[in-house]
Length: 223
Image 1 (tube, rainbow, N blue to C red):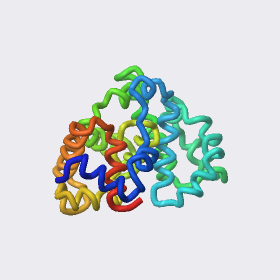
Image 2 (tube, helix red, strand yellow):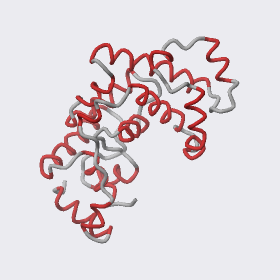
Image 3 (cartoon, rainbow, N blue to C red):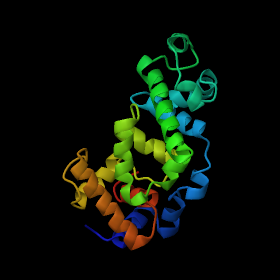
Image 4 (cartoon, rainbow, N blue to C red):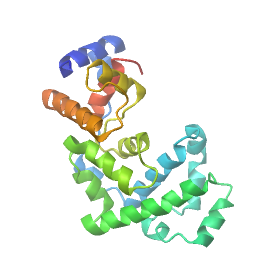
């Protein structure tokens, strides 16, 4: 496994130098800002990632203002109480993507966010406090307790909210395979622990967030 310095140099060469590479590296939100995001925004982004999964992302993006209206701003306390009448109405609402499974995921994820808020003061505080060195553990929690947020959907959700997050894109997986971290797409808990260990090592070497390390890995392959 190469050092992060070697990976950074490889990515910089492909992107036209370190200055050009740095301009492409996003930064996650600091924990204090992450903890202040209202819980309705967490449910909104969760829902957006659920609707995007297996669907044309641009179509979802174009429809999103109408979806926000249909769900009245995604208040978790409101939508954990989704009734059969609510579901029937939403299935007839042309502003949204009328998929019953995805609509019901809003209810289930609202319930999770309400549970987290009761346990931690707000869902945002829970997500903000979760340590980057166990990001794989957070993905596992979402896979088990959230609805339709397994795999990359959870990763895109966390990155979009500003949580320090790596995304196991095709290019990142290719880089991890090249570096001998995994031999195939990481799906098992064992492989995910190996991925986390590698990211933790590169983080110790560089002092950079997971978000930037993930991007650097991807840039050594493609993107």
